[in-house]
Image (cartoon, rainbow, N blue to C red; front, side, top):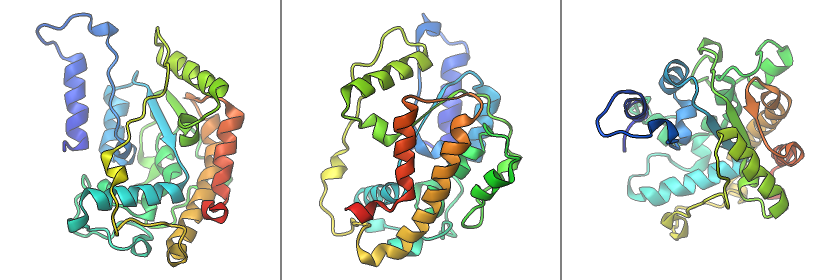
Length: 266
């Protein structure tokens, strides 16, 4: 697995540096997916310096459901060398003293679910309103100082996981069209591709159902995060500079659900 900085540099060299046998470079759109880049100070600084015209697609999901999904992914990926501990031990910041900053994002903690704080570092919002700053107060020791970042110049297409999984064909069609326009593509998407990981089907005793009573402490912490994130995303980030989205009412409805523990209806 390549580290974040290597991927960024390799992509830069591939796109911008002269190479032999390259034709129609301007017509080729390239990209990559890495959820942890938004949590990397070095990567965000490189994006602001080298990739000013790069478009970013950022999707989010309910922090409680995200935590369960990522925890179960990690334990099935490397169950015998599990470094994380039980879910209730992961409240707060990372507790791995031997982990480097590059490896830390691959581990898990409730602090990693403070999506709104990572997105605030893009500086799409003024960060001057006391009410906004109150929503951005970290629940744990902050991984970085938000105000220390340069203003990110990249256009952002913001969406919720519910939009990628939307079964309403009419609304899904609008979403695909809006994404096509955002990326300036000649052709649209017939579907939003999704590849299910084989590990999703693995049965493991280490997997969790976060709705169980025993995980109430970590769920309560994640719900505190979710409520602040929902308010900030709806009231500030979606109104931010160079931030685009599709089907505003549906997106807001999806984020409103973050105000409620998903386990209440499970």
